[in-house]
Length: 553
Ligand code: ADP
Image 1 (cartoon, rainbow, N blue to C red):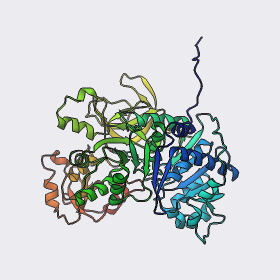
Image 2: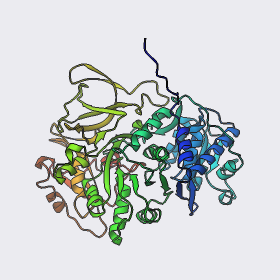
Image 3: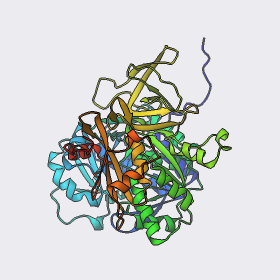
């Protein structure tokens, strides 16, 4: 008969994170640049108290366990209080991406059946517009103080966040929930079809927070000052609101101020050591510091992911600014962290250029996530750094189904020895994995360019273009070709004041890649469209250039 362990049974609850931070890092600061324009200073202890008061207030409004509370908000202390006040009390925190179209936002809030909606001042006009369509929302809460409440609004019974919190005494005990209780819902951005909700649990969220904080992952420590540039409405700011509480780090929230100048000034003022964000925000920050001839005095490390970090960006930050770049890969369905690129001891003796090749990849799986690549017959492919296949994952913070969908997205995979290897989540990404387990994304399966039976990686071609000094941003898309099915078209935004011709751009590819992979043509545009999470919107580009005639056609 199995022998049971004789240890205290402590469920992995989100409330345990904020309680830990309040008890053991209570005076550590939480700094927020707010929509109201001020720089607000608070502490983990205050955030915990206000989260308890918020939990009381939401209970007083009649919200009960399992109900969803939507947010439309920037990174800031009130959003953090909502994270803990809702999940901690058994409600479900549902962050909504305010950059989506208003109809999509309404659709998502209705799909999740949000009972309350908390939103920043910035989004008052947006909420006024969509409020009549939000059929399940009973309470609208403006995340501000009394002084900033609007004199007039079309929203009935608009509540003031700070008033609600201040009316409560904080005599509240975090409930002992089952650790598998839903804590949070995040919707995928739904670049094709309707967005789908990933429902995280307390257990998966706490385990993810542990995994994310590990030294070979984000390496969060209590000596760090951490500024999440990645929004709290984009897969929970990659778990940073939880990992920072777990280690008791100082947190700096940028609010809506994400331009290069505002970020740089905040980094310097608050002595930020660590940050995380998608490549597009770093473009803005790098452009600002380089045009002003500035350096960072405390900023040492950043995690870049969400889309491929161009090697040229990695080189600029590491070599010119002394900022260590950790390339990461993940997705909403993975809470989101899957892999991060850091060297193992055996790589430390490699020449710097070879180490760099490894750091440019999306990296190795962290404990909690397993991954492999498979062919179209769902057989595992070799980890040789060359065989490209569909990337599948499984683990403690990977979804098993989508909210409101009964069918499972998981698929069976045959292992390399031919044996059944269990159920895996298909990511929709195409990747290679090398002998040392470093994964590299070649493409999203729908973005890969299929030329004469061969695959060309759009990311490889974009990375080369991004290394050209005149290029600000580059996207490569497939365009129909009578002979080859598809051929690559390069879409370029040049840096302000820079000049670049089609021929110069194409010459730049010579010697860097096989001749047949070089793009067939280059078009120059003023702007590349982005999704609400900062990825290049290739679907739109493909539509825009569907009828583009390639010179080779
Ligand atoms: P979406 O709803 O658009 O899927 P996610 O933020 O969940 O939003 O996006 C996940 C996808 O982003 C991944 O499947 C992958 O295609 C892409 N991605 C994330 N990180 C990287 C990276 N470092 N390199 C390349 N692609 C990435």
